[in-house]
Length: 350
Image (cartoon, rainbow, N blue to C red):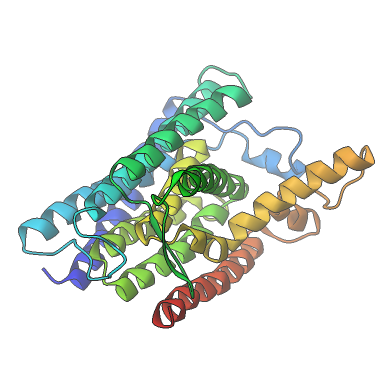
């Protein structure tokens, strides 16, 4: 089977399953009374969203994983080649990366599901405590990084510099572990912060998925294309139900899973630092939160933004949710173009 056809099939399966599940899962969530509780600290007009079914992320988790399983098995048995022709990707290790990436996403999704379940079903608005949630995420992160280390997936490509192998000595090994923990934990929670208004996290992630599909073509890495294609179909299918006014929210179940997918794609292309430009909106969301909290503490009550993360600032300035989604997605698309060009031209001139 041609890899482009497999990519199209991957997108269609993920989109179809996710969008179709909306007719089943949303009524089911309503029946279970898994409605969102809107906290008083948010914009006052969000109160109208009280009771909207949460944990809708289950839709694209099922859709994406189904797509990955079906397309990879079909691609394998019809003679497709999941190995990369790209010199930086060593033969035999990509499959480990693909499986580890899927498990990373699922692991974070389970942490998010536990948090949502406690909030909604057990009526504890804060869900998991900060320590419990952090511990769960660190355990998943450790398992992922350990898998990379054991399988020798420890070489990163840096545009215009070349390949850096972190197994050279003790110092580089420590750098690999520290940087990986920072990238995985930071990126996943940045994606989680972006999920604050109808359709925002999904629409921004659409641009990220397209960027990694493009990188898959640049690197001739079929596995990366299919993985990113499944993500693209899943978030597009979810947008059918999550676009303002949302019929369901993804919850931490979905946003943490998406964070894991985005991180996995960064490692699949052997260039996780490319997540900085490709996920520029995620970065801005996190930085706005850090700046707001830091400035508030230093000045004993003053704020830089009307509300953080930054999408809420624009809400407070009068922007409609649809406008924020469109503008933020456009900004992230620009970051994606920059990231893809860096990787492309950086490879040619390395």
